[in-house]
Amino acid sequence: MRRELERIDIPGEHEARDRTWSVVSGAFAEREPRPPERHRLRLAVVIAVVAALLAAALSPPGRAVLDEIREAVGVEHAQPALFSLPAEGRLLVASDPGVWVVDEDGSKRLLGDYRDATWSPFGRFVGATRANELAALEPGGDVRWTLARHGVSFPRWSGTDIDTRIAYLVGRRPRVVAGDGTADEPLCSTSSRRAAAAWRPGAGFVIALLTPSGAVRVLDLDG
Image 1 (cartoon, rainbow, N blue to C red):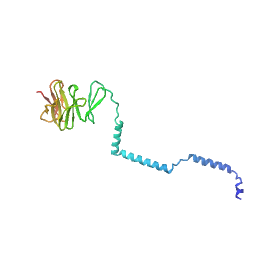
Image 2: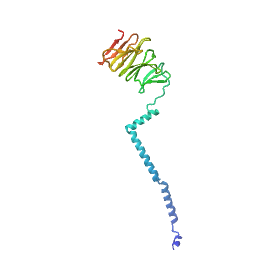
Image 3: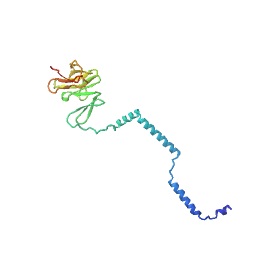
C-alpha cells in the first residue's frame, strides 16, 4: 500500500517542491555565518588583551613607557636634521644632557653634563658650571682647570687677548676668577639676585649686578 501511494502524483507537487527549494536556498545564501566556538574564544581573548594594554597605556607608568618609546624612535618632537648653521662661527647650546658645541657644518659635540656655559673672549675656551664645579674647557672637551664651588651658576667670561676674568655666582654671592683659574675672590660683600652678571664691552673690567632689591649695581674691578 505504501509503495502504491508513493507512486501517485499529487497535483502541484513538483511546483511546490521547486518553490520550497528556492526559499530555502535563498535563506541559506543570505544567512550570517556564525564563527565556530573556537574562533569566538580567540576573539574574546584578543579583546581582553587589547583592553588590558589600553588600560596600562592610560595609567601614568604606561604613559611614561609610551613617551620613552616615542622619544627612542624619534617620533616625539621630531625636527629636521641640522646640516649647517645659518652664519659663520660656533654655538654653545644647553640641553637636558648637558652643554654642546655646535660647529658651522652642523656637527655637535657634548662637553659634559654642565648646566650653563659661556665662551671666552675670541672663542678659545668655554667656561661651564654644574652643581658643585666651575670648569674651563677647550671646545674639543679637554678640561683646562676646575674650581670646586657649592651651588655655582651663571658664568660670564670677559677680557682681552692677554687678560680675562670669569664672573659667576655661588648661591647668591658674586665672585670673579682669572681666566687661568687663579685669583678667585668675591666681587663684593653683598648678595645678588640669581641672575647672570653683565660685563661692559670694551677695555677694562666693569660689571653690572642685579641686587636683591631690584637695583643695578655697577662695579669697576680695576678702580
